[in-house]
Image (cartoon, rainbow, N blue to C red; front, side, top):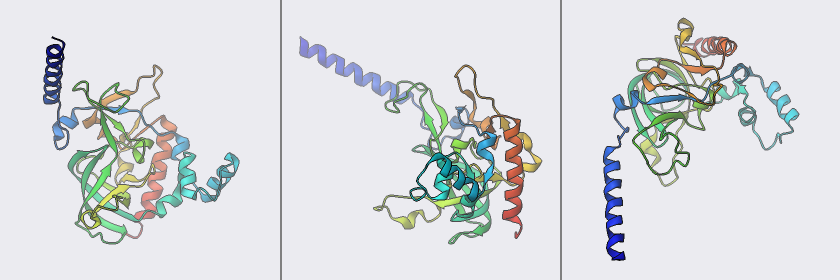
Length: 272
């Protein structure tokens, strides 16, 4: 009798599991399903984080914080302290302008986004017209499932990953938008054939790793999202999130972002 009951329980669990799995949506290449997902505005940039810092300012902050200067490279120290280093942008292996085609597919904790190169400012092995894959670090997760394990419902929402520029409030790329991009080659395990990923990149971890070329004409795309007072992060449709360039905490942060974008675009494109 006990064996029969156990057998019935196993069968019931398998049936429930299969039914749940069948009800779940695959977001890998379903752009319409992704567009309808809630985007959690959990990361937003403050004025302090958006101010571009000189090497001297970062060195002073490192000393004040008592950090080991030999253990932390300047760019890493600035990132550790939440300071945006202008020098870090100058060290990006590839700097280019490119237009997002709108083609994105979801892989583990990121979207693979296809961009067409419109100009190459720095970088080897990249040419105008190339179709590059740029990783946008956003994760599709189940609400209230803090373990990140298992699937208990078909509810999903999009969060910025803990690493990458999304942690500074950058929102997902917008179809048809031309960007200034600061990139580094995507790192893969040693056993992978690196030649298969020669034009696969990640944005460097910096609040200005991706800048819309026309941001000066569209300041409304800098979204001001006040920090929640009730502890509940604001949620907007993913498609709406793509209409912003970045989420910031207040008007002062917005002005700081626009000012820095203007300066960086002028510096990068002066010779274009």
